[in-house]
Length: 483
Image (cartoon, rainbow, N blue to C red; front, side, top):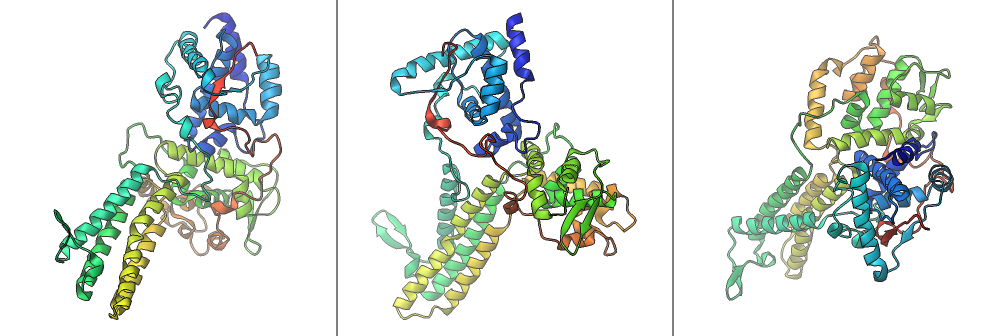
């Protein structure tokens, strides 16, 4: 990197993508919309910054990778930051986004991408990270199939997991048929299989019990296999108080731990009758950023639901750090695991109801089968309804932390604030003795994710709260200094 390039790089490094009062940073927005970890989103933004230097100093047209293009798209929505600050004051010229218009200019942008990678190596003196800047032949592997999905309406289930669910279900039913001792019926000349709907009553009940055992066991096993790593790598970072609280009980416990600690220090007042929290005074002695965020949000008496909305960015950062260490599952993966388990156990009520209909049509008694189907359905719903938040690694880390601080399992009214916060973070509100003035907080309305979208959130045209234009799959071409 020569002197001129170094000067431009210093200016770009000094540029801040986010306003000082931003509730959600650009990196957090990228992570949330694309299912990235917080660390990966930060790395992509850094590569986008490097892309801007390549545009300014390479002397030729440059073209971004898919991940960098997504960052570019997201930044374009912050119109003041992009056009006035970046283009106007830092780059000193407009940087227009030039999407591909079709196959005719595909070769041009492919050449630009090759040149971009070459200039990257020359200017920065290192190879572009392959997970952000893939090789040219892999550049378009994902883009043509990328779509924006509303996860409130749809489950995202990878094909590999769907196939695994189908295989486990088929094996469960086949194994149940074999163990039930039912005689096969020749359906094809070379293959002998059994049609369970033609079993006699006692045979089918036996088959259904064994099938239910196999299917429910398969669903539980699948949930375990998909929960993530079980190892404890040497480089695992120690957790602070609120990371441990989130690992134990999610946002609700993290927020309650902060409130309990600050209230014990006399800086917050919890109104049991109204179910609100407010701060005492305008300044806090808290040093942890999460405690400061909680204190700052409580300018007026505030419910826990509204407080959750106010500190959502800080909670998201905590979750991101835990996800980076593979201690917790993201919401979408947790939902997809539960959805796959639901698809497996769904075979039980379907099979049972189908056989009940067959029995009724043949004037056979079905009372026992109705009871078995009902019980199997309830057990299946219980398996699917169990929340999945922590990975196996997260479970091991949490157990180790709770063992280390087992003395905080029960604290009395006279306990110091640090001990109160630690007790709530690792063991919940029940760790406080009955006479403790904050013990009643466990009976206040819970802090749920569904409340995060209201209370403190606000939006504006320049805030980046909505998206427009093409997504990552629109076939972005690149930019050149001549435009």
